[in-house]
Image (cartoon, rainbow, N blue to C red; front, side):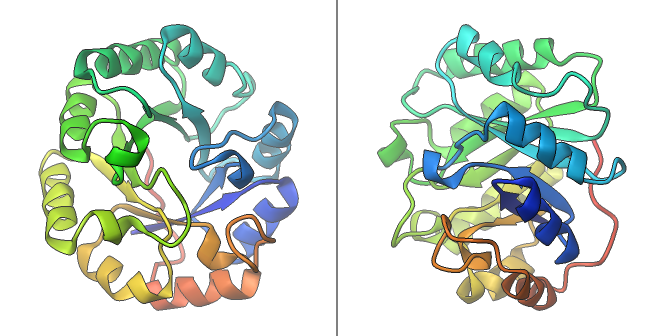
Length: 241
């Protein structure tokens, strides 16, 4: 189980790395669940992370092929590392449309050390999107590396509010059997660590729980180290695809 930490700047990336993050995730929390950082911030974040360590990049929700290509265009051309690009599909309930968009994304990064991750919203009713089980099947068929289970709306609710433990366990088991990468995030915190240890997703992501004052507050190295200790995440061995 790998520890992913979302950061909005190079300074926060440094804190995340010092705190033991396996994967640094570039994301601007003030812009929603998958808010993209600016191209300048993204380049600075990527330059801060050691070349042998992967980065994850939130690219927002997309609805057309043009939006997919525009989102991916902010990724630095000089990037030579394992990279996960996260794309969401809020507002789309047509499986064929999502499949086409994922294929556009895959074709645009062919031959590069970049993997596409489809984001499924546990609160699909809020996002106006496909249920996670449906999106998982589409993503597997399209050929992307994996799926992130997240929440669209942030606030008083979290991933396990929308996906009970048995449903989440079934999703993870199906993905594991198919060797399909799974990541979980969405308002997760100290209260959920026991469930996360038992469920063992490939990657678990945090933002609000490792910040002071919520997900838009500053990253706390102390909180991050506490989370890492409680998760018993190993010090190395991050996933490469």
